[in-house]
Image (tube, rainbow, N blue to C red; front, top):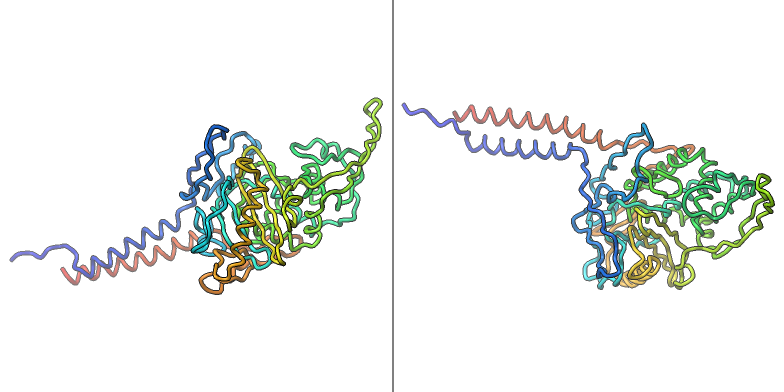
Length: 436
């Protein structure tokens, strides 16, 4: 008698196939986030033809490109921060997961000479995302992160309080407004120096009142999470590069929209010029005299040279390159634009912002053009009415909301998926036995 083949019957093969597919799906979902390789951008050269950086392959999905200096090396004994989890689905709508240019169907051609690697144009009032490029790619913010410091400070500190300048503040690295030891400054004046001329010395004195740099950074990160800015990790209050520092065009737009909802921030960012206090002579320096006050002017050229400009914030470090965020109003309609990892050629960042604002205003005038995404807390029409919720509001002294970590989610997937695989395999085995 010829024995029957031991090959599984049709129903068994189907069950085994489903089990295998499910097993692979579970393992893929449970796997930790691995940084995509990001090739450093070669140095620019006046002899090299300009081309807009291509991000179609998502080179900065998990991390900014590698640093070119030692600014992000952790202090001795401190761990190297790993990449932030990438939320799935993407915050802001399905199209916000795209890494290349994201524009509405039948949108006009993009403006020329945009060197920013990532950018986003949004409606400041509705939160609609009108157009973007690599919206959730991770980049370094440079001094645009001072927008987040301003949010924390304006909601925490007494703007009329007078604080005394220190030598430590006067000696900080990077751009400085000119704070001197013994000078007397109101917090309002420090905020003006922070947002108008990007004073790192002002950032240091503001952070000191928040408990010091480490405490200020923690508060900034908590507020970022509360605004669903999950690509953002702050390492320094001023925006100087530090271990793990990152943001995205989407996040920076969300932070900017939140800041512009604070009336005093909107006033300060639009201020063209003020008189800043001086400071007394240093008795330790022979023949030193009192240092008189001096005028400071806003360093945002868009404010002076673009009709309807509401203000903006500039940024630059060697690793971040040029960064910029700004807003403008036309016919009662307010738009915002963010630029990350830009260059000063072929035109300067504020000029690139101006062209993207013009593009956004043209899009917003067309009632048939749909939004491609939405900022947190906004309610806009995508394919259907969509609300992009913000994270739970902060409680107490900027307490971080409780969230379920991606590690917890992966663990749950492993448990549930493993049970399902076992059930399917047992079913396949029983079917196989019945057909033997």
